[in-house]
Amino acid sequence: MVSQIGFGGIPIQKPSEEKAIAIVKDSLDRGINFIDTSRVYTTSEERIGKAIKGRRKDIIIATKTTSRKPDDVIKDLETSIEKLQTDYIDLYQFHNVSTSEDLKNVLSPEGPMNILLNAKKWGNKSYRNNFPPNRRRKRSYSFRVF
Image 1 (tube, rainbow, N blue to C red):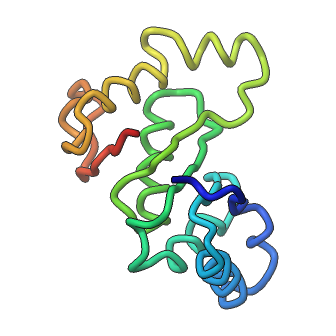
Image 2: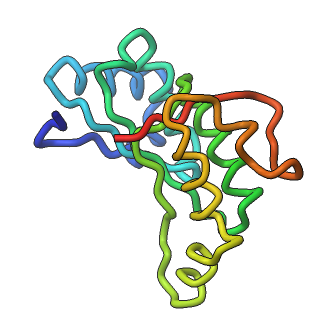
């Protein structure tokens, strides 16, 4: 179950890394289990990754990409997974889809949403080899789906 209050990752960019990690850990200790961040929140994902080490199974992580090209979205997803020190993201979002052109691009048959939906079909199995050969990645990750 998702906690009634979530943790937003924007503010932890400003304090020192040590303080930011302590803030995330304190939030988790107080019962918050939903963390929202983004690739564009500079150090947020990396700091959250350090803070949740050893506690991942109890946390729901949402992150986002501003990319609109499938290969860039996959790269952002992999970077997020690496920075967050996890092997899956619970909720992956397209950040700031604010124009009809953005929406059309994201939802097009060759667009990034379709690539991610194809990956989702395999649940906890590695998604790396489920992409077309020109989009296969070097590392394998799991793609967990609620």
